[in-house]
Length: 115
Image 1 (cartoon, rainbow, N blue to C red):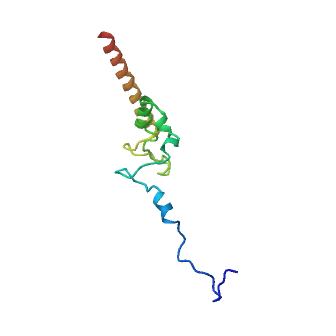
Image 2: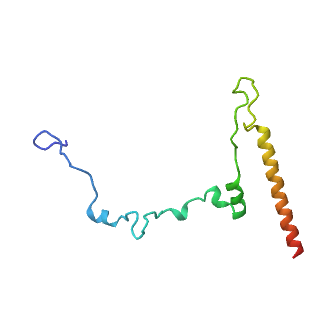
Image 3: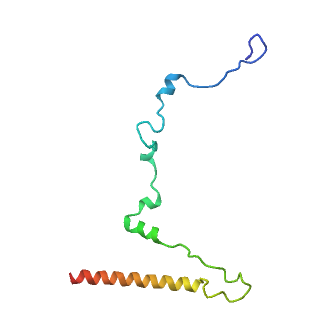
């Protein structure tokens, strides 16, 4: 069926589109200096961080998710050294940071009230 006289199928060197079609396809970076044009930018869903306003974005960026700690049971029941950071230390540092922020806010409110 696909054979012509010689008993072998027709061999094609490659499959490609006509030159007129290939010339109509825009190449990424046409007209842009940096080449980072996104053709679907208008239809892209915003990321979670892009949905937040500046106030909430600042809180997400500055938040410490999990401070560096050590395993209390890794030493086989021995008391950890004094310089090792424990859960209690982490909670105390977080409380100090909350109190400092509350004090800064109170001072700003008082300064705003005196003006």
